[in-house]
Image (cartoon, rainbow, N blue to C red; front, side):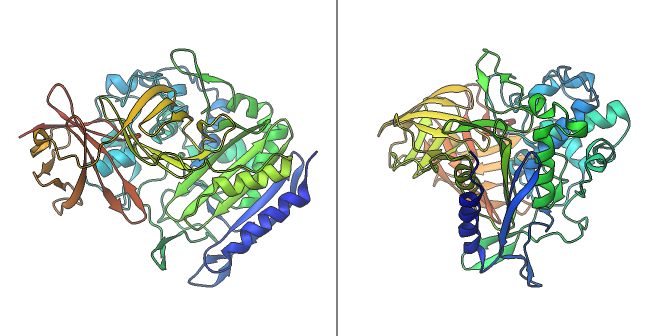
Length: 500
């Protein structure tokens, strides 16, 4: 039984909290269309414009499965290696199949973090050609393809290049011809944030007591570039569930099981994540750009779903889950009780995690942790599937398809002296200087540089603390056995420095 009234009441109670500042909209729908909606807050603080279900916003990473559907409709071979579809890649990246590039198991480094690690702000205006030129200089992958799930937008950037190379048409043109026009959707695919979108809500983030506008200068690509209203996104998801028009059978194709190289299943599919809420199977995806936070959830067997779009930097997953739980009659999700908070690290290599109440950050990737009957820590993944047993001293279990054991980092560690010195990365020519006092001079904005504090870890490792506007980045500096210093995060592990 579907419970529309309790779900709407839950959504209205959440939306009431947005009255003073930026806002958002919930839309509840089934296979036949929109059933209810509610909203609150403002789309523009500057102009005092209310946020409504028809207000265009940035979908961010919810955009991904639109490209996957387009590639499937175009008959692109997803099992072909990238070298056969896009010329000019180094052999390691070219050997990755398109399907692994899209299901996040290809080991492709995320370009935003690669650029950030070498000192380029994500607010810098970079074209697709400039990002592509950097991508084609990457000689290695983050990991052996098929061995782990590591979130990366690069596969979707390459998916756009595949469409152009194989069909001679831009993604925006094919998307409109194949999907948007036949379904009567008024979504836009802007090039970057500088391209105007009619009626677009402004994205905001909180800096202490002040709301600030979000910025993201990089070319969007299909990994997160679509803009549209909550109403249009709900209409799309409704058509996807009922298989309307060009979407006949498409949801099953997008959610077809994906596996790691060892045969174990992965929760991440083609731009959608499959998970469960109680006994109800869910599929969905989140989206995040500076000032925009969104989530889409559908229950395929029940034929219902929830869209939540926000132009305020707040977690959308738990509110969307609460409304979905009310809609399908499941118990509301509860955050995991207090766990052994603190910093944990693997015996060797760059893997680390930090636990806090109800959440985990693994190598920079943050996931919400929910309470379970067996006392384990599990995510309802916005991207990264996590299943851990935590004690006061260790975390053991599966993170992104990999069995891991992480031990608590002792207090009072000093920086390993082997890290001290001037380091140079030859591929891009950037330099990093590490000081005996545990500080470092990080490359930043050309020759400007930035002083950062390092958190020492056991075994010639340390975490750097990089911040830019609303986002932070904590890459691990790991002195490898070959004497190179690797800069590694969940999304990017390809930069290796040699001591000068």
